[in-house]
Amino acid sequence: SQQGEEDPQALSIQEGENATMNCSYKTSINNLQWYRQNSGRGLVHLILIRSNEREKHSGRLRVTLDTSKKSSSLLITASRAADTASYFCATDSFGNEKLTFGTGTRLTIIP
Amino acid sequence: EPEVTQTPSHQVTQMGQEVILRCVPISNHLYFYWYRQILGQKVEFLVSFYNNEISEKSEIFDDQFSVERPDGSNFTLKIRSTKLEDSAMYFCASLWDSSQPQHFGDGTRLSIL
Image 1 (cartoon, rainbow over the protein chains, first blue to last red):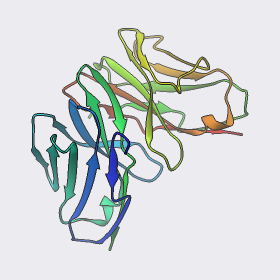
Image 2 (cartoon, one colour):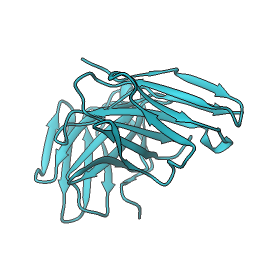
Image 3 (spheres, rainbow over the protein chains, first blue to last red):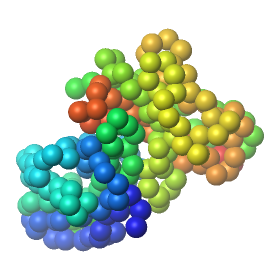
Image 4 (cartoon, one colour):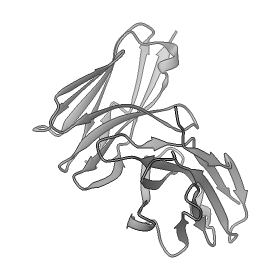
């Protein structure tokens, strides 16, 4: 698999349910970030987790990082219609801040 | 909150023409980037710029591409002779330091006819 692959590729859930997206990567990282992209729009930064952190929260978002498995998950609790978007993980490495993006998960919240 | 701004939002250009995409990064940021996203694909790194010079470029960033920070506020991407496969969304990003997230602009959709 490529550096930064999300699964599932697409996810549809009912409003109010929780959404979980996963990201796997191949090489050592410094930070892992999650971004949201509404259709045809820019990338909005959601949360950054450092390689020495295991879990981070921001509002309805919870991110976990397992460096032994080279994977991360993004949980959105109590989903809303406005959460409909594509979600990307992106990694950087020590001494190199360029981001390597995953393939993204397209999340659809059904009202 | 400070933002990265990009202009134009949409650029339509004939194949073979030169195009310049413009970005105004966040004012106290030190690192600048261009990425592109071909429709339906992942976001790809093009080039990073620090201390008035390119620090890294990808294989995509060939001799047809150049970047410039002409006046301390703007950061431009020039494609000298556009090809059909240059059609994509181009994102500019800026960064204060490596412990912080990159901030992205809304992108310029480039359409080559």
